[in-house]
Structures are given as C-alpha cells and as structure tokens.
Amino acid sequence: MKFGYTIVYVSSVKESLAFYKDAFGFETCFLHDSDQYGELETGVTVLAFASHAMAEMNLDGRYQKTDLNAAPLGIELAFVTDDVTSAYAKAIAAGATPVKEPIKKPWDQVVAYVRDQDGLLIELCSPIGC
Image (cartoon, rainbow, N blue to C red; front, top):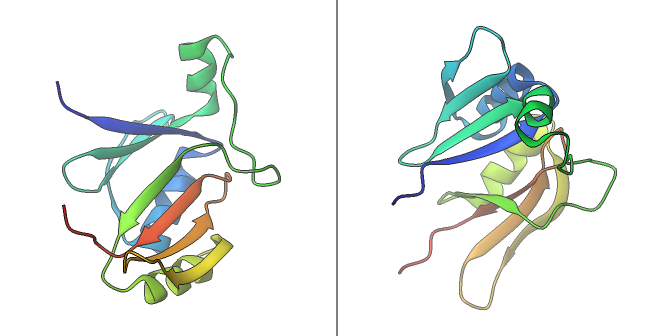
C-alpha cells in the first residue's frame, strides 16, 4: 500500500486550484469537465480538491466542512520550502489568511501557518532531516 491522495472538499474547485497556484506555485494537472474535481502537480503524493456536492454524494452528507470563521479542523497541509518567510508573504498576498508568522522552532525548523479561502490550515515549513 502507498499514500496516494489528499482530497480536500471545497466550495469551488476552480477557485481552489487558482488560489493554490497563486499562493504556493502549484500547477493544475487535472480538472474534470464538471469542475467538481481537480488535482495539483505537487510531487509524488497528489493534492486534489473535490466539491462539497461530491462530498455530499460520497459521504451521504456526514462530514464537517472547513469554515474560515471557525477554529481549524484537526488536520493541516504542510508545504516544505527553503524560504518560509517569502512563502508566507506570497501566500498572504494571494489571499491566504495569516494564522502565525514564521518562527524558528527549538529543533531549528522555521514554521508559519495560514488558512486558505475555505479555512483549511496550511503549514509552511523548512525541511528537516529524517
């Protein structure tokens, strides 16, 4: 088994794809003709978006939507970059909501947090070794 996808249910797949390109530089690699599902070029593991309508169909309406006006859900997307400060500024300029400015952690990693237009929590972080 391998980890294949992270699918985020959103208000608008097209708007999410555009936001993630503007804020983080990810290109769209697939958008279904229905605009209900799309994927970004993010490397080995696919980051995809599906509409709330698709979530309703797939999960019989039993899921919790992200909400920018509520506390973030207990999950985040983490994007690794060598320049967290610049990535944070670019994300904010593209419309991300600031949560926490870049800070150096005790383990020498630089970490910042923003939220996307649907309220999903995004960590911007410098790489750490394994």
